Image (tube, rainbow, N blue to C red; front, side, top):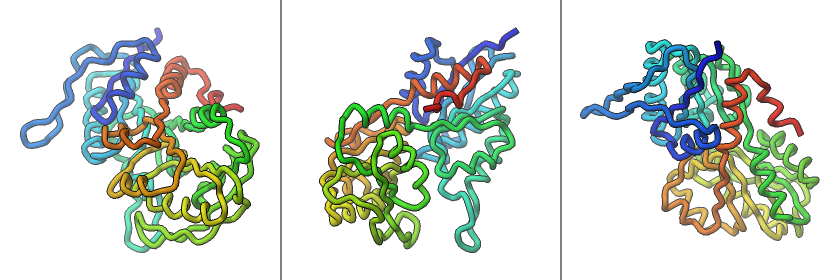
Length: 314
């Protein structure tokens, strides 16, 4: 007998979870997820989940530790309620930038968080645009790694930009930029960047032809905006006519919005993996693309044991 599909939402991004349920034509799972007076998390599933195929939607964005702890507590509740399979749907996987020892005496928190999620009782993981694809290997349970590229590329193609150069803001993002460039039949450029410290980067040089062209920067995360500020400045100095920046995860912390307001940008395109505050949505040049359809289709395919990778066959 096939398990019943049920979808529940943490407090990380309830609007995205509602859109996913609307895509799947399912009611949202009924549970209580709140705080005790001292801040501890209380979870109570208010419907029978015994033998079900349960999906918990919870990005580990800000407040990262709160959202992560909610996810762990929820997993334990479902495991003890005898759910047949519990999948963590993590549109944005926090702590992913600490994925290796790049200097002495630092933790690999991407691995630590993976261990915590597994220990809590999740059967599999569904996530989107990990900062490093190798993070999938930190898990011993199946990981379905989605890409926002189809959503972003559809939007870009509708804009009918001409003389396009797709730009990777660093060497690590070249594969992502090359994929976009191939789809858009565009040129490719790379920003040679030297990182001084966390959240601080110095742009050194532009490798590739950007003179007189529309430059489309593609990356997985925009956080404080420091890297993008340097990238936009370098591209403009090299003769770029216009700059469009596309990101999957709009972290936008600290001075990000102030920096955005000072950049010579035509458009900033992000997805709704992370919820944006009204202040951030008020930025006139921002476009938010929905990923509920992509995540909803992946959930449906996982539930029916169909191929998820075929979503990305071009």
